[in-house]
Length: 254
Image (tube, rainbow, N blue to C red; front, side, top):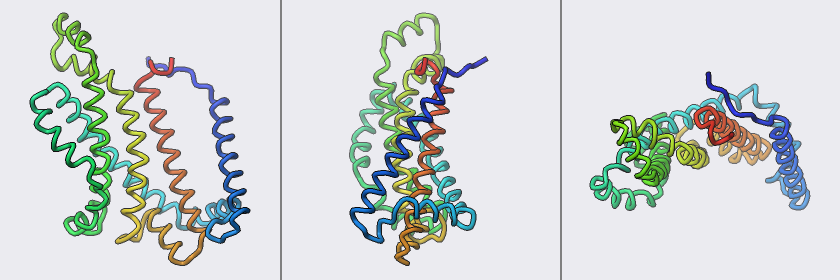
């Protein structure tokens, strides 16, 4: 039976609450100093968020969540196995490394108009764009993490008669998991940023659309209600990643 390591829920809740209150206080002070309708006070934004959440906002949050999760899943499925494989294939990696170095720095979001022209303005274009961006982040991190695995650890397992499958399962993958979860966290932030841009035009659904539509009406309480929706989406996804990591990598929390 797998048991998760201890987690002080009260302490974590206290720090989360303290961070939240600090953010609200800083937001309130900045709103009072600027006195600009473009930055409404936090209470007004929170009230608007609660007001429109059951009416329309929840649909946009669900659609954006779906797009992020599908893109992240596709990125992991494509990038992790490739990164693990190339880390042990030196000649092939030397051939593909220049291609990665050439393509990685290119801002993939600039290709969005081309992607929309190819895949039209449906879900595929948005998911493809997000997946394309986060693929390289996860791939490079996974490959570099697998390269750091000690050869002596691999030799010791080989001396016991292990196959290459056993080496991946018992040595390489467990060693890479912490770095892969770090890549997931980084990719989540990137995916949500790209999501906002992808949803800001050629669509009628999603938090990016909701925010830009409210901005076009100069109704900033709705703008910040949408921003709160994005913040809550990211917060929940990060908590989910932490929970999965605690289950998959319990040795890190002992």
